[in-house]
Image 1 (cartoon, each protein chain N blue to C red):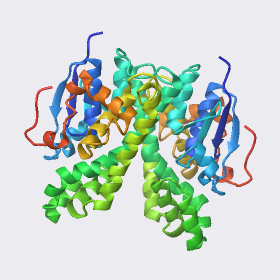
Image 2 (image 1 turned 45 degrees about the vertical axis):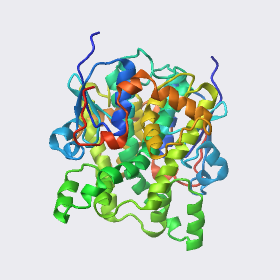
Image 3 (image 1 turned 180 degrees about the vertical axis):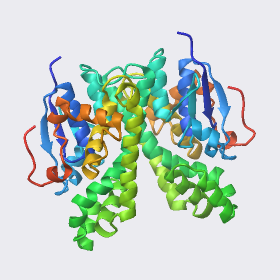
Image 4 (image 1 turned 135 degrees about the vertical axis):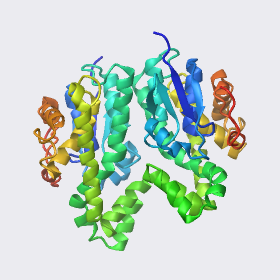
Amino acid sequence: MSQPDLVLYHSWISSASRKVRFCLAEKGLAYKAVKVSLSNFEHHSDWYKKLNPSGVVPALLVDGEPIVESNFINEYLDDRFPSPLLRPTDAHALYDMRLWSKYIDDVCLPAIQKHNWMTNYHPMAREWTDAELEERLAAIPTENRRHVWYRMARDPYTADELETALDILTDMRDRIEARTAAAGWITGSAFSLADINAAPYAKRLEELDPTAFDPDRFPNAGKWWRAVSTRPGFVAAKIENFVEQGQPDYDPDI
Amino acid sequence: MSQPDLVLYHSWISSASRKVRFCLAEKGLAYKAVKVSLSNFEHHSDWYKKLNPSGVVPALLVDGEPIVESNFINEYLDDRFPSPLLRPTDAHALYDMRLWSKYIDDVCLPAIQKHNWMTNYHPMAREWTDAELEERLAAIPTENRRHVWYRMARDPYTADELETALDILTDMRDRIEARTAAAGWITGSAFSLADINAAPYAKRLEELDPTAFDPDRFPNAGKWWRAVSTRPGFVAAKIENFVEQGQPDYDPDI
């Protein structure tokens, strides 16, 4: 089977986009990357919502057919391109990988978002007039995202909320420290989508707290992070500093 | 391999429990069913939260090891006991099954919950004193569920909210009507977890609106529902009327 045509609509700084770039790179799959400008609200545009009705990045086009939800995109890639296999074969470890990836999405994503959006969007959104805000919100397809954009414009996250969010990411590190004690990886006995799906969060946590993966204090998590972040696939996926990659003109070839 | 010891902690009326009972029955797996009394808040008790830290049903013990999250329990069962296979083998259909099951959890569950909880819990919760309410909320491990219980006690769902919730379930029926046009099933060309995970929602929708699967108006969905609801596995799973199964003394053998 020849490789299908793959086009990734993504943002450099989006954690979900980073997960998929990492998986594609580990699989050695060639793809065309199309940057979706979040600052220009391209993800809320009608053309993009035809690819992803939730109006969030990424979306992967496979021979023109859109695939969405980063955890499911990565499992799809592993189903369709099983070499190298990025999932455990044991049923319980596979279950654990899915539960861990859901935890990353449901718990860690809202936490990281608070820090990322305050840095990137609050300074812009707070300047909007009521009419501009209303227009922006009307284009957003989900209640949850409308609420977050409203907060960026009119009710920014408090210092307490940001601290709680950082605690959640620190707790993720503690879970990684415990999970990697046995075999060095988050689940099962090998590198898998569980590690890939956590990696963008580990990167951003380290940016917010440079001691987060200090190998003297967190020997297992520190070793894990060194192993993950030096993989050729991680480097090829360009999971780099948020602040630099969030610049409007940042758009290297991949 | 001999069958492991399976114990399902469940509630008769919980949609997530019903999904897992249906899957276990389709697999022909023997299991012990333990009723968790939601009216007595057994799911918020310390012993139960050791099995499922989110304090929700179900939890499946496999040789004493708890497995949680109904969509993942069902995929685990299919991984561990692959005969009969309840998932498509095509990568895209498998992706579509996961996306559909997430839609059921993220969109349809909060909708069905509004109707179920107003029927079952609001008449009880509205009588609580502030001290009782505070004690109940303190035992609930997730913010989301604390909020829903607060609403049951002090700020019940409005007629508008209940109508919107019913519209969401009706929209699910419309999606089933469209999806079953090609091959009779929600995804792929055979009965799968996509159908199992939707079945408890179809049952409850039909209870709220007896015309919802009228075969004259919705020929594909009507045929699908007849095929699903007459399967021996559906019958064995005892996915029956919510009102009757919600009675405190309802606890037949399974």
